[in-house]
Length: 202
Image (cartoon, rainbow, N blue to C red; front, side, top):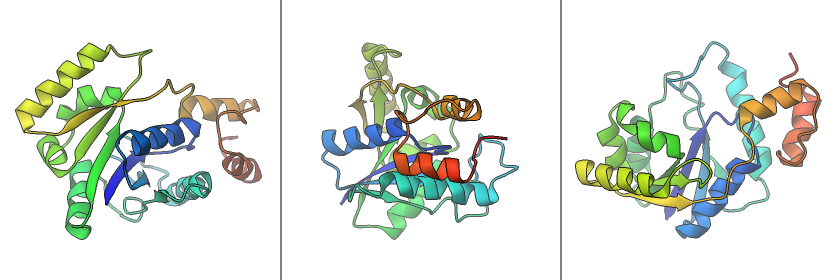
């Protein structure tokens, strides 16, 4: 099967994340999208990772429960060590030899991927789908970056065309803290869970 992977902290997951998965699924005729919450991402402060990771995974589960082709992938949150993309992708390739993997990244990551740990191994392990947002990135610049990386690493990077994501997780956390309405941005089941557990209030 052709599996799309969306990694992230999902703190919280929101409609923009779901939209991105949907566009990747349809544009590249994927069979499934795996939403993979980070357990110990190398670029984040991991001081409060434990149950917080499980909470984020539960919110992902609530957000995707109505989409049969969306699935929660909990591999990274079950690890007790820092998760690197190259290692996770190599693990999936070894464990699921019958699948082809498509790693969904944002435009910013496309321009920073060479600063990741072992980028050549990331690019060897999957097809990269780089999300293009017309409000922020010049399409021609992205296409040049893709062309250069494909040639340098013998990679397979493709442009994923998506609408503008209206909001970020950090903005949502701030809105929730200020008791603002987030109903337009978060699935109802996730919003109900956040309210019931008083997340992001303190």
